[in-house]
Image 1: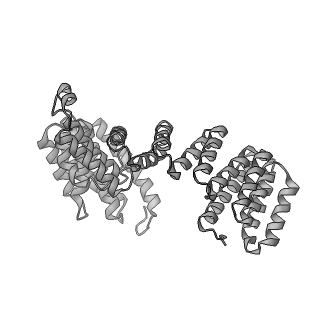
Image 2: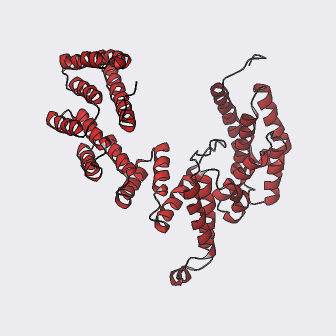
Image 3: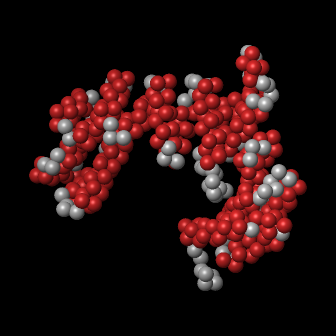
Length: 400
């Protein structure tokens, strides 16, 4: 890098990832050498980091050291030797820059101990950070729960009318998480190479919590968030089934179920959810809009006009209905009618002129012979209309 040149965070992040990959490869093939010369190795890490990134922020710098530390511990065969662990911690800590330098190292060490099944010592390092992140909170609760299984034999557990002390601590931690609702960040600051073991722990504790606290909807909510992040369709389906059954009067879970059905191209299932929503929320316009959206995707005129009539009856803003009329005719390949709707909207609602201009441009692409452009235009039109209409229905005022 040229001296004095400043790189954007995105570029720095990508270049750091390449350097990290090189070090990970070296650690994997030279574990014994690294363990025997920790000060030399970490000195080499810092030298490479400072030479390649002289203006790196303290956050990026410390996160890099944490990632290397986890990899050293993960690759080592002497992880059960606590003198060795302390030596790694000491060498890592003396290089870090932030005031809370020990936090990242403690989490790194705790997670490594958790990964190898040493819940007793993992707790020592993780217990103070349980409320920073849902994954960490679940990890701490998992430690307590695993230790509870060692308190009594299976027969003793079956005879006991009340859970033991460790299980109570696990339940308390999960319940406290549901109250504090920390973020679900997937521990980005540590850049763990493999978090499969953490994912497994997370799901175990979520489903245990739903058994312990069946009326606490947050466990389903955070589970759905995690399933989306990790593209875990199986877990998403399982949680939606729980949510729509146990919390059938919560519109959020039914809405999620609707979109899940759409993703799976299950129009019948989505229609069933819409009908349920309309019955449960007769004065809410959102279920009617979801029915209209489904009609757009299936392009069934009878269904669309049925929902359109209901929308008018329930007082859905006229300009949103006209926008949806445009979309329906467009998707039905009614070119003349679609552009006619745009002209009427532009005339009747002059403050929508900016949006009509965009829609007209996208509509022309919709009739392109280029299949990719056509699909892109369709997606853009449907997504933008949905966002616009939902905002209008939330505020009951036109979005200008």
